[in-house]
Image (tube, rainbow, N blue to C red; front, side):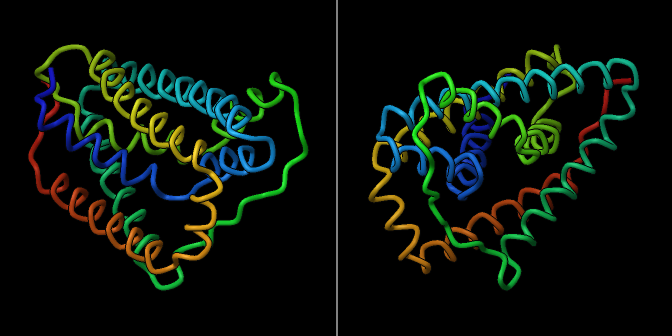
Length: 213
């Protein structure tokens, strides 16, 4: 269905994005600093479930739309590439970075830790936009089920994100200090992310990938 090279490119793109401090990372690290790694991992489990909900919604939505209107494939692919260009600009523009700030959170029980992680992920629109913009760039109409292809890509993204965030939670104290003090690294990371996303978007806009007739 996907070649190893295609999955590697997708995994690297997912890795670049997951290394960008966002609501999910900030919450999990903050929770780990406040209550310890176990609390951070429980919160991360909720975040991962939120990813799963976004994944199923995006996959089923894309599958239904493309089955009903095959010609929508090119429109979705181009719109996704334009969104990637916008993300690249947000990363590269002057003042585009926001400093990482861990939050002091109240102590919560296991159930609430999981629920808060889930809601943080579920209410993060960037997760859904990632799926809707990235998936069409890697889907191949001639390779069969849209749904199976989407779920495969989603599994790679979730595995990448869960692994990286688990490591960040386990080493939360060091990560927080590093992100707060190493602004040069934060800027370099932004430039790498912006460049990768920009090049990927341009490549996708110039690639002629037709929808099935």
